[in-house]
Image (tube, rainbow, N blue to C red; front, side):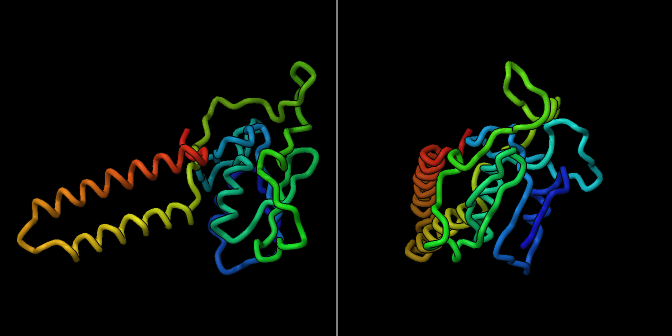
Length: 189
């Protein structure tokens, strides 16, 4: 088991860990960020938590990172502080996989506003969006680069203008496909 709770760079620490794949990862998430938003703080090795909601990463950002590492989100604690991820190959018949928004728990700590906990006080700093997972980006890159390479191989060597037009067309089609895929999967804000 791996537990990460350092109150600031949690996302970046997990992202940097290589060669260690425990069955379970428990990591603090920033529950003040709604479950449909994929955000994290910028990495800063010298930073320390300032007591505000500017820390860590959203549950969705951590879920995207988990997929690239071979993990699946299975639960969050009731207070809205920790997320539990299990190696994906151990999920079958052991866990019922649910959507992030069904697993997410809002903060049940900190200050109450209108009778509802808001977590830590708001910060004036903004977090960065994590739009797509690393593995998803890699598969899209592979699809585009494979198509471009095969176009180069098929084009007559003297017909550079036609080759250029084909490449531009492929890039436009792939870009539109990529954008529509990203929009349909809520990966573009």
